[in-house]
Image (cartoon, rainbow, N blue to C red; front, side, top):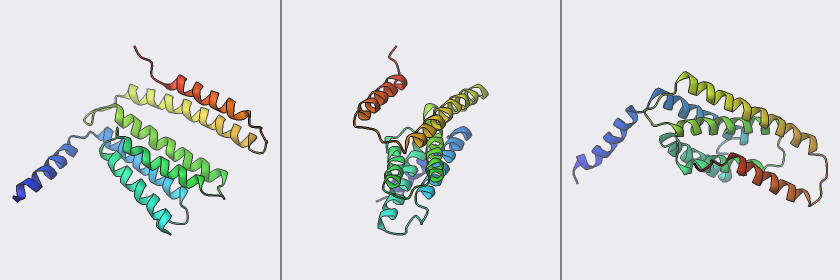
Length: 182
């Protein structure tokens, strides 16, 4: 086996990374950092305390590695899914910790979504940053209102009929945010 067969693909990959713009690196690094913050907030006892937290940490790390190299990859869904499942399995979750993890997941999603919208060598102009910021502020406002509504209604007992309203609300949300065909 020739050494060139092994080194050439690695060299091509490294040269490809040089073509990634500063905007892309910024968005990818923000996405990774905020996802790691969400992971640390989810597992405050430690990332490798026992086998379960180790598996979650390795799943998130692997998913982040793939998503940092290819922001439009579907493998990036593993990290938030693992964090949400880990949160769901915890009984003693404070409101502040849940809000911090949720905000970190939202910011990570926004960063990776913006990185996936432009080519690796692309740069955002000032107007694109402003448009993204306005969209983020709207999402943050809606998230805060929805979070406050959840907290306000958390002590109220609802019947099974609320499942129908929840499903209709989810369908309405999907219809609202799905792209339209032109």
